[in-house]
Image (cartoon, rainbow, N blue to C red; front, side, top):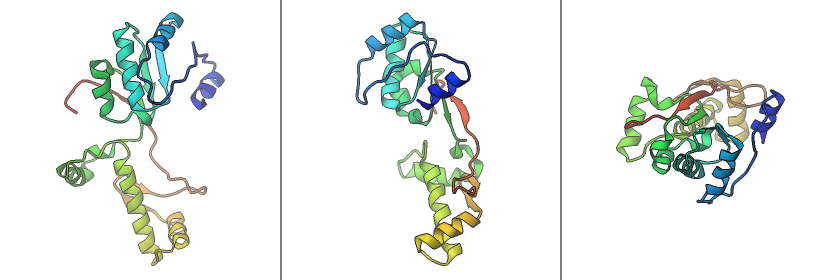
Length: 185
């Protein structure tokens, strides 16, 4: 809804606006409707499970539309579901901390334990690093004291230096546009 509002405010009018139900499996009627409307870009605000099916079924039905989405599709499962049709799919997400050389050993530890630290894994890790450092700075585990220390400090994390603005929101790097491509990773 927010993407539609922003696009409309910028003068972009959607060819159609539809929703689906979580767990839906057959999108043939929706894809036929998109073909009829001449859709060339699908903005998806949902998760990878349905997105993968839409991408694959759209390709199977000859709809040559590029799917663009946010963090809801950041999972290697998307490619498993969509197959080769995933190539060219675009999504926004923060910079990938798993490719930062400073995190090489940590990523290796996750993988050695049988877990691929994709999507928000290292973002969650950074949150815990921040809380632990703020508790140390506060000299306390009291939630109020830790929160106060977080507001004042700068913390070294797997995302880089992390601090918070006057509203308490983390100052994070901007989003990056990623394109899904064929390959082993």
